Image (cartoon, rainbow, N blue to C red):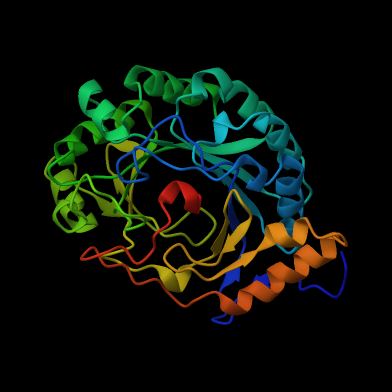
Length: 336
């Protein structure tokens, strides 16, 4: 490793950044109501990072001490030839955890390849177990297809399989007990995520639909008493996990509104078009695509841009469900 670069990334608030969420596409075969507009305008394909450029970004970060990369989107598994990138990252020196977040639509087909190519953990979005409601929330999704994908992932023996659910009052808060039973039956984890106010959503009022983590814990506690657990994932993260005495499944709560977790932030995001986002809820960013496509490109220039970017990583986000969204990019453009 070149001695002119630090062995690890440290921001100005002395937080170590060792986790990157790498978006491979902004496109998705679903149109989830909290994630994007139904008639979404996607980034032109020439502006999307190539698989080779994504591999260079991953290499730069791992050489700077990043130990975990999560592939996101959009839906990462609909990216053409994405498995070649997965294979490259699965063999990348220094990378300890290659993980992926998916809507599950392609998992039944691709779970064996993901496991064989080094993916350790899989997160799958699932907000309803009722076919009509699931279709309404995703606009295009097929519930049976997603459940088949989840079961394929469980059968494949990944180190971890987790369900992510966004609960909206007036839409799917009645699903909470069913989702808990679903993961208990399979011995997998479940994380409830408070809706994040990214992009202009017209189908619901975020202030009225907001359901806090505390409310969800109260609902679950009626059937299954929850016991707070230490964060034992090996890295700081936003989820606060709880256990149940009669199940190996853990229930996590990611609470960007009600229980701010920024003091523990250990991550950055790279969007599909190559913007290094230093914070989910702020626009502080660096254009890595410009570095990658410069005539005199060298990996060291990319690493220097990443190191310099640590100086603009903000201390925290400030989310507000009232009024116009402060961040106009949708979640699919942010990178999951």
